[in-house]
Length: 366
Image (cartoon, rainbow, N blue to C red; front, side):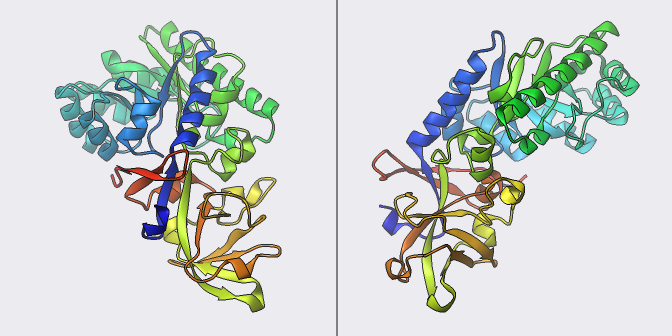
């Protein structure tokens, strides 16, 4: 029973997780020849990966710790989707020597030369910037072909990420952003092929663009990850209904303050994160939406309005303080589930009745 769990802790609603996974699988299946490569940077759990990528992959990871963990659990076909540094090449090569199929990424000529010079098996994707402005080389930049030629036979393809799609606020805006990404990454692949380079993988994606893309001609795979768990921002982007947030933080009321219409809970900045991704969204949920013990919205639009390291202050219009004595259990739906989950070592998995049926470990760290 959740009443016996220590707080704060993570709850994972299994039926909701499965529903979110099926929604994305169906969306990508609309595009012939496109493979879904789920990103495990949010879930960080082999048990979740078995649902999202049955049969052992393919998957995406964001740390070497994830790469090792998932390879040990049979998920060998991976894209390590963070720019590689030469000091990490040996670790990836060792994984691949043991049977892994870990692909790395770069957007730099010097790194490409280091990869080419390394004796290990290091298939590499060139990261392409399609508008996010975080990393990557532009599709029309001369450096793209230079990097491709420097990699030589270690060039496996190109990849992009539409993180800027999180700024979209309508289905049409998402479709437009998805097409910008598709056109950009395909243009990069075409330029490399025209220059004599072999490009087998054309990898794109983020949860919003993967769901809303009108077509994916020229793309071979889509990467998306946060869709599995969902959060308050993704709900407002149309990735899933507000009710389909699979991960919540279980917390306990530790203080009542009628004079200011508030209660304190034992989930603060460490348990929830300080991410304020809904601040610019139509509905600002501050540091998280507060639900009752069973995950129902019976407290109206109560939210965590302020956090300290281990304290969260809950307020809401007409907050029913008489129903919230010290010790009351509540759930908090996160703004950005990737960061909220990061401080927790495992999930307490709930079935359709709300009963805890399993504990699934997470791989944290780097």
